[in-house]
Amino acid sequence: MAFVQAAPRLGNQYDDDRVLRGYLERTLAPEQLEASRAQLARMGELAGGELYAQQLAERDLEPQLVQWDGWGNRVDRIELTPLWQRAEQIAAREGLIALPHEAPLGALSRVLQFALVYLFTPSTDVYACPLAMTDGAARTLAGAGNRELAARALPHLVSRDPARFWTSGQWMTEAIGGSDVGLAEAEARFAPGEGWRLYGRKWFTSAIASQMALTLARPAGNAPGGKGLALFYLETRDAEGRPNRLTVDRLKDKLGTRKVPTAELTLEGTPAIPVGELGNGVRAISTVLNITRVWNAVSAVSYMRRGLALARAYARERVAFGATLARKPLHVDTLAGLQAEFEAGFQLAFFVVELLGRAELGAASEEQQTLARMLTPVAKLLTGRQSVAVLSEVLEAFGGAGYVEDTGLPMLLRDAQVFPIWEGTTNVLALDALRAIAPTGLGPWLRELHLLLGAVRDKELVALSARLQAAAEASDAWLKARAGRDEAALEAGARRFALTLGRVTAAALLARQAQWSLEHRQDPAPRAAALRFAAAGVNLLQDHDPEISGLLSA
Ligand SMILES: Cc1cc2nc3c(=O)[nH]c(=O)nc-3n(C[C@H](O)[C@H](O)[C@H](O)COP(=O)(O)OP(=O)(O)OC[C@H]3O[C@@H](n4cnc5c(N)ncnc54)[C@H](O)[C@@H]3O)c2cc1C
Image (cartoon, rainbow, N blue to C red; front, side):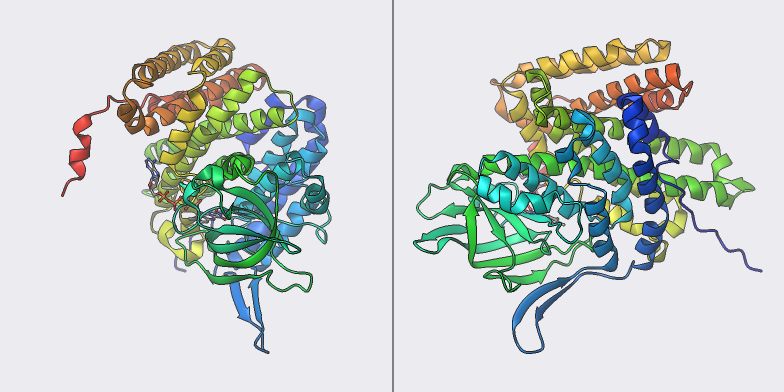
């Protein structure tokens, strides 16, 4: 018999996840964890079992755009893959959007929601994309003060009944700009008796099968720039189920996220309702962006976790040079480096989740709100970059099999490549973090680090803390030397600065988790992760070299 390699298998993704279980045990009260355990285990079972099997079976399926029916009517219907249809039902039933509104665990309800999202996401072909935008839209409508709109859409968005549940798109990007949305050209015109109508093209609209969308358009006569844009609500279908005066021009042919129908659209007088004022639209949509960035960070860590779960399972089976890979010190060392990156990213992403939950329930101090503004872009950008690096290495950990499509592995890397791009690229978010820091400087962050590291007692973790404090002080000095003095140097170093903030924060959070694990679980693994993560570098700051642009000359 020729040798046949066993495919790696996944178990219950909640039971098998030391990092998730340890984090929840430390963060939730015992009765909160007890009340949530059955749901987490159910999602973990689905994720490692039926959903993962369906995902592999549907590897070749993609959503289809049906533009015309047999009688010549323009229908622009999107046929989703069966897994996406099932994912929508599960998301509604499990309350993946409803939970923060029902708030069963108070300010920690976001932790439960995102623990479920983290289990659900890597087995549902990026269905997290429409859910993230739906979550952002629900929070925006809940807080916008437009009672009529909230009464119309919110009960659908937060419904646990799949038949009532709606998802929402977030249509910002136009051909002229995704990051620089202030350039948007879509126009809103008011007609007496008709209300507002939208005209123009939207260039990347991922939740095109959604029932509604929040979008930006410039009311006719408004000033150019972001302040002249307004946030509008629209429904994608009219009362007869026809496209609501919009056409889906095509679905994009993408590197990854291929189950996500991402469309180019033309708005041809689409009826729309202003969510609030007729201006300041970029500010108005920032709630959606904050929330989708948190989803992005959690999704990025969930992909790292999936890749590592598969790589570990493979290493236990695959024999090379007389032993399984799990017994080869160099292979183990390679995976350990990836695991450390994942564990640090996990702590950072869920810290931002906690801050979001507290802020939404009015339970966050002024300082915590400032921290949330600083760390949300930082967590998104760091975890996005980590996920691409980690999944690239995960593919290599499978050798040739990692490069072969019907193992289902290449999809992980292709999908992960979107995490640093959408919802703000690394550079755009680094500049966003600088803007969030500008009013206060790094004071709130330095005080939070002090608190986090104050809990550390273990000798090795205390030594690590000293290193992290030094990197934090270097970051503060770096910022003070440039802010308001040398804007070009500040901007050029913004990415290294933001990555340093992210790595220092993630390492400090992991050190806190490690201390807790030593004391409560006698588990030294998080300490090993913290030390290994920091050894890979936390301070990425370098002096700005004004000659660097010469490198790009022809
Ligand atoms: C699969 C997919 C789905 C998407 N779905 C949606 C959706 O549903 N809704 C939606 O609104 N959008 C969506 N987008 C669009 C996405 O959010 C944008 O593509 C993204 O924000 C980047 O914008 P851009 O394409 O205009 O790139 P650009 O802004 O042109 O960026 C190009 C490069 O320039 C850099 N850059 C830009 N500004 C600066 C600066 N000031 N300083 C330094 N560097 C800078 C960026 O980091 C990037 O590397 C989707 C994109 C993808 C890939």
